[in-house]
Length: 318
Length: 318
Image (cartoon, rainbow over all chains, first blue to last red; front, side, top):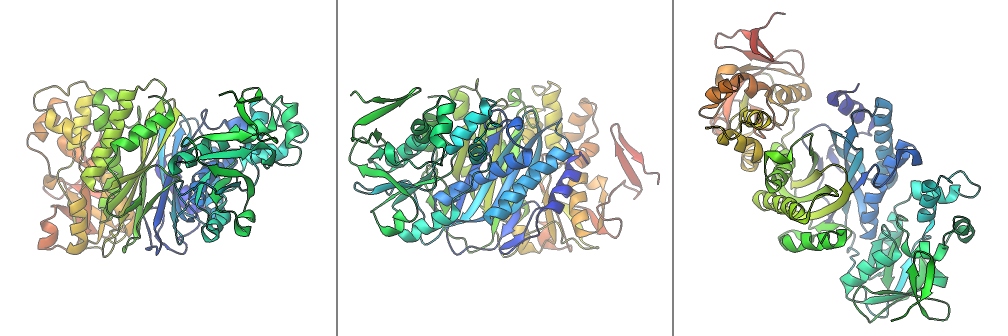
C-alpha cells in the first residue's frame, strides 16, 4: 500500500463522508465548505517528532490526535466553532503502513471529537515525521482576541495548570509507569480543546483570551502585551489536580512553578470584569493591573512578589 | 533576533497590514476573515528541502514564493479566488536570520502577487527545512472539480507543458548556466498560478479541471479516474516554449515525453465541450473518450497509441 496514491485512497476511505457544511471533501484539488455566516477563523500548528514529541511517549494515534487538538485549541481561544481541519503529513520512508493508518485514525479522532470535518490533506516524504494542522472555525457574535484586557479585569483559567508539564516530566524521565503518574501523563498525551468554554466566554463577556501552550507566565504575558497592561497572579490560587504537588515533589519539581511555566495544558486563560458567568467558567487567578505592558507578577499568599527560577521561587528583588 | 518571539515580531512587521476582508491578521491565536459570500475553498501543500527543492537551485526567497504558489495553484484549479494564506515554517537551527527573512519575503511576494493575504504562520524548530502552505479561496458561481469530464469533451491545457521539468533537469545536472537554459530554469523556479484562467474557465463552462503538479499523464489520469472516463492526447499538440525540443535534446531528453510526464508546470488541464471560449483559454490536446476510468492514451500524428518510457516513446503493444 505504500505508494502515495494508495495511501491517499486508504486515507479517504477511513475518513467520514462529507458532513453538514462540507460541499467537497478530500480527493479533489481543494475542499469546499458552504459559506459561513460568521467570520472565518484560521490557524496553523506544526508538531514535529524530536521537537514536540517522541514516538515512545504514546501510540502514534494518540500523538496525531494531540497534534490536531493543539491546533483546534487556538479556535477555542478565539471563541470560535470548529468547522474543518486539513492535515499535512511529512512521513519518513521507514514509516510503515500500520503507522500511517494510526496517524490517520488519530487525526480523524480529533476531527470527530472537535466537530471539525477533516477535509484536506497532503502526504510528503521527509526525513522527520511531522504533522501540520490547519484548523478552520466560524466566529461567534464576536471573537476573543488577546488585546481586550483592561485594568481591573480578573484573570481566570479553565481546568488545571501544570498537569501536562508534570506528565511530560514523567515521560522524559522514564517514570510514566510509576503509581499516580497516569493522570498527568494523560494530561500531556490527550489534551482537550476547551471549545465549549471558549464559545461560552463570548456570551459571558470575557475581554481577552489565549490558550496555554507555552506556559501561563508566557501566554498571559502575550495577552498582557497585546492589551498593553500587566497582570498579578496569586500562586495560592493556581488550579491543580489532586496529588499534583506530591507527584511534582516526587520528581524534584515544584508544582506551582510548573503551573506558572509549564506549557501544553491547552486550557484557556481569560480576562474580564468579575461576574458569576466568568466565575462559572474558570478559576480566578488574579487581576489585570497597570504596569509595563506584558509584565506578569507572581505573588505569594502575603502579596509579596516572587520570581520563578529553575529551583522554584525566590522573593523578587527589583 | 533568533528567538521565536523576535522572529514572529520581524515577520509581522514585514507583512502588509490587514487588508480588505481581513478582520484580524497575524499576531493572535488565530486570524479572522470577514464572511465570504461564496463557498470556502481550502487546500494545503508542503515543500521540503531535499524532497521538493535544494537550496542551491534558487535563492530562498524564490523557493519560498514557489512553495506558496504551488498551494495557491490548487485554488486556480478550482476556479476559486485566493483570499488568504497561512504558512508553517519548520526551520533548522543553523538557518540564520537573513535566510529566515528571505523565506518570509518570498511568502509575502506570493501572497501579494496572488491577492491572498498572509494571515497566519507558525514557526518551529526542525532538522529539515520545510514550508507548509494553507491556501484559502472563495468559490465562484461554481467550483471546477476533477469529476465533471464527459465523453466527447475536449482536453486542454493552459501555457506550456514540460518546461518546468526541463528546467529542473538543468538544475539537477548542474547545467542551469548553459545558453538557453534560463527560460526553463525560470519555469521551475518561478511558476505562476493560473488564477485568472481558472476563474475564466468557470464562466466559459469547463467541465473539469486539475493543475499539473505531477505531470500531464498522471494528473489528467486523476481527472479521468474521478470522472470515470478515459482520454486521448495527441502528442503533436503538446504546447511548448520555443527551443524546448532543442534544449531537451541537448540534455539527452525527449521534449514530448517531458511534456507528458514532467510535473510542476502548475498549468491547468481542463475539459469541456469545444467552444471559442475554451479555445481562448488553452491549447486543445485531445479528447475525453469512453474507456477504462483513468486511462490516458498518448497518440502519434498517425493516431497510433504510444507508451512513454525512460528513453522516450514506443508504439503501444496491448
